[in-house]
Length: 114
Image (cartoon, rainbow, N blue to C red; front, side, top):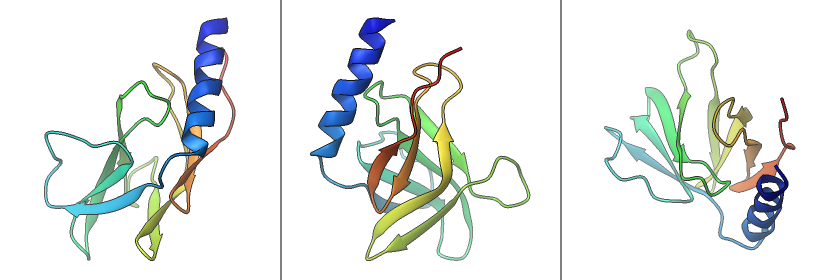
């Protein structure tokens, strides 16, 4: 348990000094997902979902629904190509990371403990 907490702290500090996330619009989910890129699957008018790697360092793929008729739903916006995702992302399995992507940076919401 303590190692997990220390790992989370180290990853948060490392993330503070790292580059910002960018957004990439793709027609299909790529076979290989790169760190610090949020892939939006669809086109300019229709965006189905987003996929990214978990920023905690566990390298798990995170899929986010962007279709408003299905729950839960996220929205993605950009300013000068820098993405913001709403609402927060909270992994309920694995690392249980809880974070926001705001202006291309990870903002940690805290750790979840059962």
